Image (cartoon, rainbow, N blue to C red; front, side):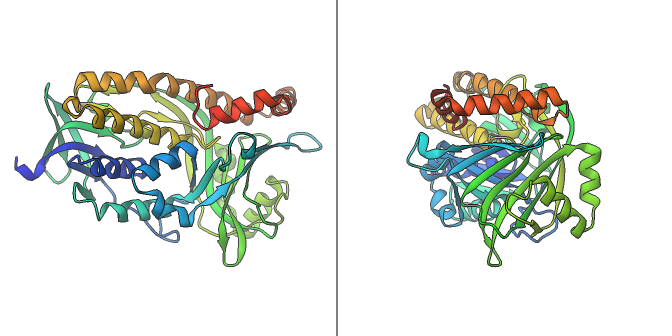
Length: 398
């Protein structure tokens, strides 16, 4: 093993969370290796582009600003000043708007397309002298000793470090190598993601439309080809989602306009469509010897309430604070025990809460739909409750 394969930190997984982690650790002075089996797709029209979008809530924006990424992202970000929830299961839709001004001078969050995030994050790594970024190489195995982790790579080499971080997704190779099990809930749902244009401006309002099968969520984007634009995530029961995915464009546009209740006028498809299965999942432990489990290797949630990547960045922020605060403990049991204590309860609460919300949104039972609409109105209309829920959504503990 050569010296060039000896690092302070090895990150498996070059998704958005992994790229943010590499930037954060590199900026803090840690010699960092990040590997991912695929090169990032950084153009919205390329095959395989991630057409989802991410709403960075206030704490996530602050973290990205701290590690020097927000200055790259800010010019592309669309602020989310209002989050509207609509229940369209009855004869007349019922909606309530949650205003960021109720609790803060800032918006709830800022929305960016995932393909653009990959472009900007990977470009930022090019100026990081402390980071070795190796797209096209996967982490294939893990061995540990008391003082080091040894990560096998798909190019036949092996790298070692004081700390390995698993950011390699819901089917994490490193988590499995550490024999850490997961608890998984399968909903029988799939989600479609795509971008649309529409004649009515979104006014920086993000809207979740609930009926059955799951929410239809419109999240503001910058104008596209001179027209107002939004990112859409449309969750439905699996067979229904697959049928929608197969529709011709004109039929699909008719269906999505109807599902949106015509809120923004006729929707026009402005990108490819992608589809993926919906699960909720949490790892039984967040660390083993010399290994931290983070991001989707640690937790997966349905795309409700903009929680997924924001939870992942919280994982990275805690790891960064621990690593920087006591670098002599990098990757040891003391550091990793503190990481688990800091994140476990919050992850469990949010995974359980979003699982419950998704099951409620998925149901087609009239009595439950009526209760859902009534509950939404009650939670919104009591000001202290509304404000507490909004603060919790941003990451506060209550």
